[in-house]
Image (cartoon, rainbow, N blue to C red; front, side, top):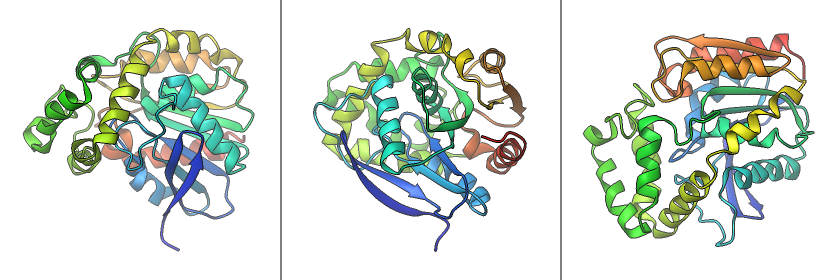
Length: 286
């Protein structure tokens, strides 16, 4: 078997693709952010596949390949419900749920409910508290998402250019080493009208409820299971003080800061991130 295989699952919102390393080890589910797909985690999955079952779904956040249904709820609570449905359909138990960027926001919202299938959580440089939209990058995304899908597509065409992708207002402050991945991620929204419509719907739905993460934070102290917060030291999109605040909210929270990385730790520091996660899994039983 290869390091991971691409699978499809039919959920209420539509087709969801996911990477699955297989095996009988404890399941770890990895969530990505806007205009990203499961490949965000490719190098981390390769590091952890021996001894763990790693799964990484591609959520309908603009880099997905299968358009979702017209009535799909693409707000943060809607995406969190989709993740819960994903866990249910695969009957995953004692899951370690890992989220980076908007994926970490989804994890926080999911924890508002009991999340009975989740045994541990890992939040990695993600939106929290009042940081929605996050930084300059998020504000630009929110502004472009307010455009009609055809106009949104015209603006996104600039992402074909590496120089534009490296600007702080796009992917420049998110990753220092992941331009090749970013170039892949933007292809669906550049070429598929249905994916552009989904992306605009998701951006508008998420940005319409900017208090959702502050409300979710009030529920984090009730998650009495192990929690790890991993943050890029000096992150310019996700404030490092938010990492410290999140770790303090969890009864079993701990914080690890990683140097020489921007927000997308799985791209900039995959080996170090995998080491931190492996140590957490070893010392914090679900």
